[in-house]
Length: 406
Image 1 (cartoon, rainbow, N blue to C red):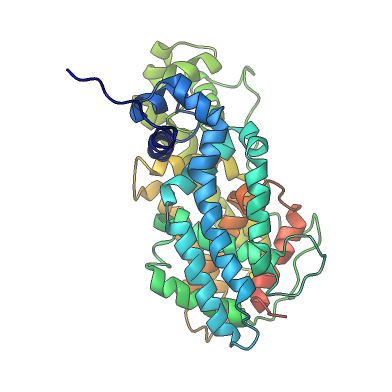
Image 2 (image 1 turned 90 degrees about the horizontal axis):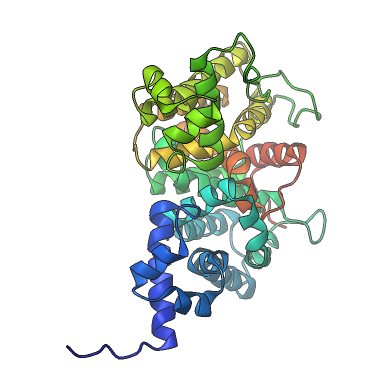
């Protein structure tokens, strides 16, 4: 049998990046080892480390760099091709379409990055150089609108980007109101150009104010208290671990250990890990949404307050929502996740003033924008999200007035 010719450095690099891209998209960051990548690429671990050094560096090259290249490409075109003489509506339609092109290129990889940042806090600092480059690549888009603080991210552009990202990442959640890309682009162009002209106060509530509908997630009873039964202890431990590690990264054994019991006892209460996830995260999500809707009852017309409350409500549940997003990759079109979101979409649509050209799509975009700002904030603001009240003010301004070119 003839020996295989030694591979060139370029070939090894290509094979490793190709294998890493596929594995990160399939499993996420935390559950991929360098030996898995080397095996998939049919190279030795020493060849992999000689080319890339660390798994974080490989992740950056496999996932962040392609995204950066695409963003930089169309952002540079905006920089060199003046649009001041073009009608804003035309500008925004092109902008939204191109943001969709960027975000839809590898949606699985984007999902992997979002999940990795949620479960691997150190990853944000490790890929910080690439995040800064993405931040710079967005500047030409931000130059389309008047800056308040030079050097600071322009919230209108970042939130527009976040709306598109959420429309792609939470596509199944929003499908009842954003059924396809064409209708989404049309509704979003209308929103960015004109905003939603409503007369409900026009400004975000002051910090700390509001109806209380956006209160943080309910605090669980302290583990180990006499009144806490074994079932509740298991559910509490499961919820914490699923939020920290995601569904694939948690075993029933680890849940049992965290609850101070055995797997045998766990399986007396819950038939499967799937059953545990349903009762620890999916059902509480539906219950929390039902409570939110109840607190919003009787506040018809208050779109500004709803946007603020919805942001606080979703942001407080960010870890759980990312865990649900990851779970959905295994359980597409899961009604326990989607039905509560549809109820939120219907609530937003009921608060829109009469005469909206695309009421369902507009409601879908408002929820997508809030989801993007609340759940994808680390990626959206390249590792440094603004404080909540600034984000709320930016969301309210975007909803009311759209994006005004300078």
